[in-house]
Length: 469
Image (cartoon, rainbow, N blue to C red; front, side, top):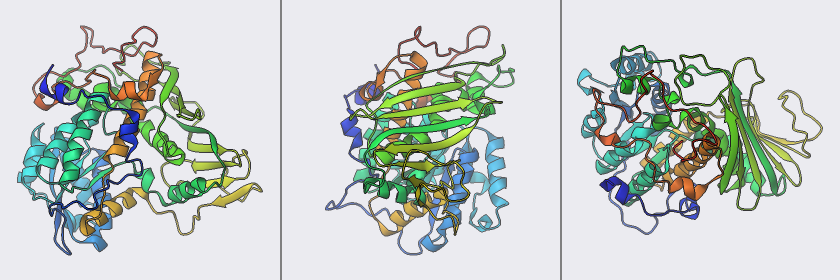
């Protein structure tokens, strides 16, 4: 067993990871070093992982930074040069932020160690954006904290228990250094959902008795990968198609379903204690080698016995829905109606939830105003993070991000193994999905190897029960 395993093997409980459910660390009364920017001092950001979400995060950050002091993109990192260059070009074409892009050629880094070079080029108090597949999150977070950088990291934070424990361990050092850390669960920053949460806590729908969430959509190409044609290594091919491989991303379940799971847990003010599930692969031709199911159905159970049902599907030709609902003893609520934003949050006097957003049904008690348009939570999460950095207020979303990631992984593993999985089992699992992730090189082997026919292990509920999925 290596030293990383030894350091992160101590037992953690669900209670341990719930202490920051509201999101921020309590740091009052502690003398902390100065790492926040003053007044109009320029803050630099580095982008580590130049895919669509990373590019979007930079755009959001630079778009809202005007009133919060000068901010510039300083360095970019990816393992694929074409992705980095495409991201750079896209950002330069955004007229409102083009003057905030300052990435010289010598600050474009390619390879697994590029994040170190990018962070080395920055000063304490700058910001590292970590938007690679989550398998690489903990080593990058560790180095950012070592360099005294604030961090924005995308969801999911982790795909397994081992890396969750590592992140929690590193985060103690981040808090000791007074570093601000945001996690890309932007629904928590949504104005509509925030007002709904307040009303639910004030008793608007009574006690929550059941919750349900759906993300039923057409197939997403990156989740249904075909055999490697052989023009790149297995490692590069897997990273290029990371949604298809559990060790990299937690697969389609963790990467796409975490938002619906997180927003429901927020409304409940709790994390489930266990999950049971079912699902499967329905349509695959002989060339598909991904590790995802096409459909997922999870029953989560909270400590008080309340059930939360999550249904996910990636299939063409089927009914689509992207929404979340809460039911209580006095009525029901739409948490989100059709997508991440706008949420169209609503409260009803009974359980006849109207999905028609036009008009005003008789049982509608409250609806978040749509004029002016709901603020974009992707922007709001950056406003809140930058405000905390500028004004040195407590801001650390790591423990909540880990709880959401563990809860999501718990549902995925229950589905893939066909077993009931509880929160503490998931958090304390000794299986490491990405062993030796810090030592990976571009020309090296992947932690996951195909068989002689180019196929990878797929979940087999009831047969493979070893909780490695």
